[in-house]
Length: 210
Image (tube, rainbow, N blue to C red; front, side, top):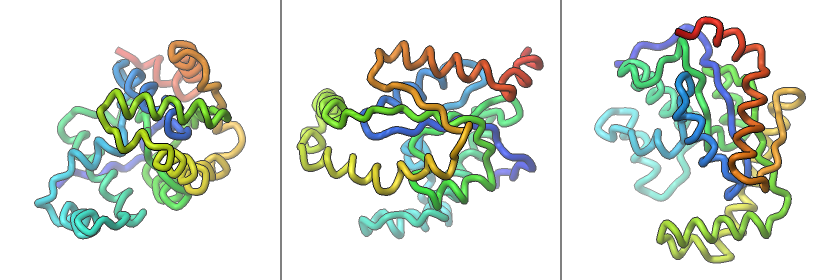
């Protein structure tokens, strides 16, 4: 069993509607030393369904039911500890780059028991037609034809607006940094890196870098 940590994990959170590019930016940042990209999908794909915790997940997923928020964060935290034990993730020097989790305010509340979010990067794209175009293009590229339908796309955007976007109010004030997601991806990355390197939390840890 993975050993629990006695401190809150430093993290950056990427938030944005489907198609805003948060997954792309998270993956890029995760290739940089001292940043560990953790997408919600990675957690569930890494789950050992033979464990008691994994079986609790299967109980819901096998029925097509939503996994409760408390269990979602418990699964996430267990996998983080596993990655730490395997020295894949080094919590004493790595910043977590969170993508796809938390999905709602309740998850954000529970997550705050384990994580210190230093910055929320809100990849903003008010043009919903542009979001739909990106989602359609990605679905066709990945050969997920059903996901390219207008109905599925509009449903995903509506779910984000209703359930996930309110997280911005949970992390209100200076914690939220808005970025124009309609820029070229390299310009979005530049804005993210410029902001991170200006933060006291990053400057403090960079002084101890090997």
